[in-house]
Image 1 (cartoon, rainbow, N blue to C red):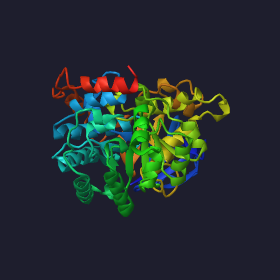
Image 2 (image 1 turned 60 degrees about the horizontal axis):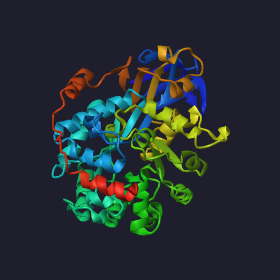
Image 3 (image 1 turned 180 degrees about the vertical axis):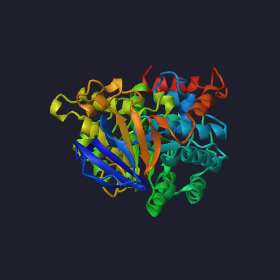
Image 4 (image 1 turned 90 degrees about the horizontal axis):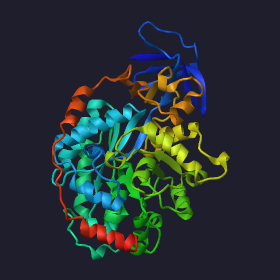
Amino acid sequence: MQTLIQSVLALQNDTLESVDVLLIGSQIHTVAPAGTIPVAPHQQVIDGQAKLLLPGFVNGHTHSSQVWQRGLIPQLPLELWLANVFDSTPQQLEQFYWGAVSTAVDTLLSGGTCVMDHAYVLPGQEMETVDALVRGYRAVGIRAVIAPLIMDLPFASGFPKGCLLPQSASPKSAAELLALMEAIIAEFHDPDSGIYIGLGPTGFHRCSDELLSGCGEISDRLHLCYHTHLLETRAQHRLAQERYGISAVQHLKDLGCLTPRTSLAHGVWIDDADIELLASSGSTLVHNPVSNLRLGSGLAPILKCRQAGLNVALGCDGAASNDAQNLLEVLKLGIILHTVTEQDYESWLTPEQVVQMAAVGGAKAVNLGDRTGTIAPGMDADLVLYNLDHPSMLPCTNPLQLLVLGRPTEVVESAWVQGRQLIDQGQVLTVDTAVLHNVLRHRPQTVQKTESPHHPVESHYRDVMLKR
């Protein structure tokens, strides 16, 4: 199969140029000046006039099952929000399938071609849960890194002075969880079909050193992604000092968990020394501006990170803390938030830079920097074509700036993943979105309304964090 996209605006080395792009099989074969690639009889030809072609973005951090909790959880700080999330987590395997489908579709329709799913898995049905996620992502055709969210410390351990709270036993030990991960990898890791398994310890706050370092060993041995939450909140920053007496970043480095395959979600409360450690290790920070605002966590020091040479990617985070999965919204917040953290406007992010964060930075974050993220010969054809003639993109001034800083709606006209076209004329080709919407419309009523279990947690949080 060959596809020729003629005379399209494309991002080339931070500059928009009018080019022809020839796709053969799963890869980009040729990128040449507009009008210079001859048309062959067997080719699909796409007129690129009034179109913008960009590499597919990576949704660098999300939790697909939270689609079912969209609009459900009130505005609370993370530690209290989590108590609500755990109580309303889906319990049916088909909900996980449709959560993956929904996340993949929303990611595609907002410019993404790959997702890092830090996936909740049902206790006792871990293999079945991952199977449901794999089926969902394969049905849509998007690339997916599935990093099962594992922990071996109780919920209370994630709070400063958590020893004062009622404790619950972990259902599995670190050794059992590591064995489980080996089994999941053996069964489901399938790069040729765009399905990757990653190591996903939830974070230092609810993981033992044995689990954190054990995941690192598997990541090193099998060259897999290592993905974890990092210093999302002030409470986690305090907990690290309480537990280790040093920075959480330094502790992860000492455990051998920071490598070029490591991506860390949030990093709101990292300091200058942490940034240097992360940059020198080749790790990636995944910026989640929407959820960081939604939960009151703060603003990650993204400008400092980039100035230090730390790779930065972008993520939606789960729909329970974002209430959407729109990467273009993430790009907009990701660029404009940081104008208030730096007075020197010459240091502000540009639309070109934030697109590179979402594409190149995202590809590196999921260990695919040699395969995708740029429009160049030999790279996989993970591409998104935007309609510049859509009313939300008019008048036609600076198309990249309009896409990033405006409010584009329904502007993704076509999308390809590994050369396979998944969207045409704004319609998903692989799954029936009407069926998806009907499933979501009739979500199971599984949420248990309770009055008392979170009161001790909230009281403790207010005592410790707000000094009531």
